[in-house]
Image (cartoon, rainbow, N blue to C red):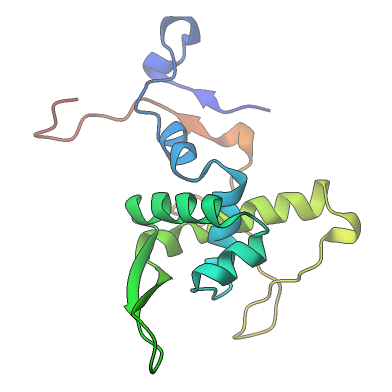
Length: 164
């Protein structure tokens, strides 16, 4: 049960995973434990630096470095706020790009609930609109559920005007 490599990719010995691999690049952005846990906290509504560090259980130095990287990657935005009588500080809010990472985090959580966590994990995530459990699935644009052995991978055709 594996992905079906097609076209130029079918002969695996003739190509290597390209440097521009999207998975490799994504891992470069969120591939640390602390980065993923900081994003988890952002999904749960955490915005303040001290709360991120405390809830994730990392040092302020680690929280600062990871939050800076997540801002530079465009997953979080740093927004100023000021409590009455206090200096201006910054909070971290999800961007559209950060929100789009939620299914990835949910998929990892779903996998962890099934294979790693005791008793299925501590949280049950449901659709607030109807109360039913939510799950990440691989589906094609026509709506079919697609198992791993029905996924086909081929080299993407260069976009017109692209130097690739």
